Image 1 (spheres, rainbow, N blue to C red):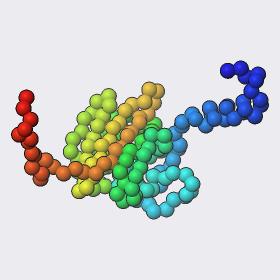
Image 2: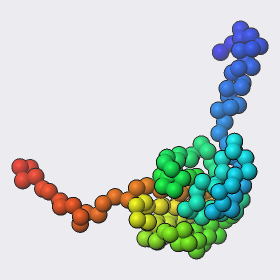
Image 3: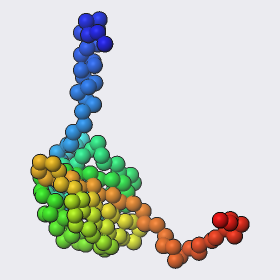
Image 4: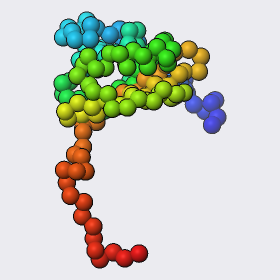
Length: 162
């Protein structure tokens, strides 16, 4: 592309579009975990997530967060970035998640750690990965709880042969 043929307004628009396309985390100071108040309604707040623990000084990565549903029954992916090391973050969730009504199903501590919890109607999976220089990325996925296989009979199609 020849930049001399572009006028100043066109060049300015291209530069502006390039700069706005760069994704970044938005620093969000969490409100008290069970608080209904929000200090700034324009800035995303952790106050809507009353059913999961949030580490102090965590930042919500809006580019990688997708939330659906009402605050008390939300599903989706909440992505956090924190300056805490992965071991501390793992221990935080291991100690605090049960306080929010979740029951632990399993946990795996490794380079990428996983914790899985369940409630009556939902499943929570927490993935913790160390960042390259410092801190951790936490991906919390909440999904509806499926029916167990024992509650629905398995049907086999007798017409299929191998």
